[in-house]
Length: 215
Length: 100
Image (cartoon, rainbow over all chains, first blue to last red; front, side, top):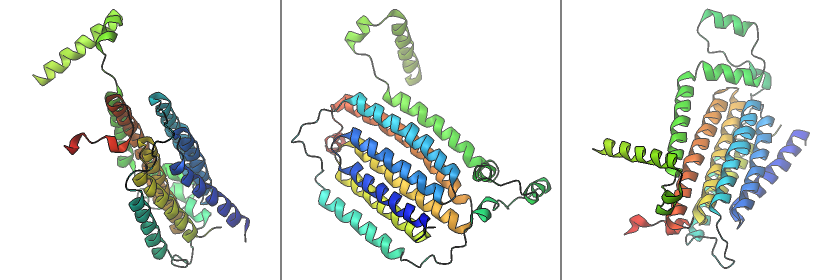
């Protein structure tokens, strides 16, 4: 039993246990904190498979960004918890059955020994960026300058996957605008009385714009 | 070094847990968290195969999945906030306006 295997079993056990607690907790804040623990464990697993950049992105985006968003929303909507309120939906038996069936299906497909002969070595992975076409790129590869995981992933992202990369940036812009538009609130009558003048002017212009667009 | 099958089994377990969470929970925020769990399980698969095949494509796909998960969480949480303003609940079963 190598140290890597021991670390894998410990981290994997923590990840599975905390993921079960995510869907088992009553309070969404507890669920969010256990989800954070799961994300961190998964980041450790990424590091063990020589994917340091993905692990860093996992910690930054998931643990840093998405978790804060979740906690914000949990605090914002402030759901009151009645002690006798049901946590499970009506379909909980079917849900357990479907989940178990998917797991058994997966376990039968991925028997131990199916993916034998592991060829992956870290050195090979880092210098695996070889599908270059121009001569200047060949020089770069021959010098062996692609040494780190971040550098190799950056090369792949900005050359082979340049168009999907730009589409992803556009997707993020659309998602941001959509979240703002969906999440913003219309003013009630009372708030319109007490709101300062400049906000009301803005609301008026928004109404004008809407009318002009629908006309 | 743990084998690829060990990683696949772990990610299958996480995916099954996420799927169960999506189906059985009534709180919409927890459902969204379970979806994030499933996306993470897929990322584990991609990174494991990236290492197994000595190709960076899996890691690039994992980064794209993280991007899409971020956008999905933002829009989903905005929808949950709006639904809470409308119905004063985040229960999945209560959102049945189209039910007739």
